[in-house]
Image 1 (tube, rainbow, N blue to C red):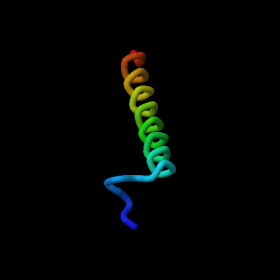
Image 2: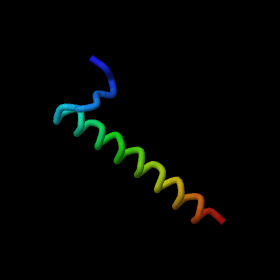
Image 3: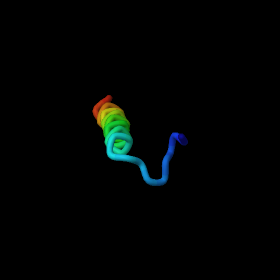
Image 4: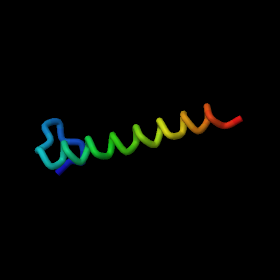
Length: 38
């Protein structure tokens, strides 16, 4: 079973959304930290 399925099932799609949200939050925190740092 391929890791990136063209038609992922609900569980896999939910996992991709969670991983994407975690990555986005990490990037946003990094941007905020770089702006807030003197």
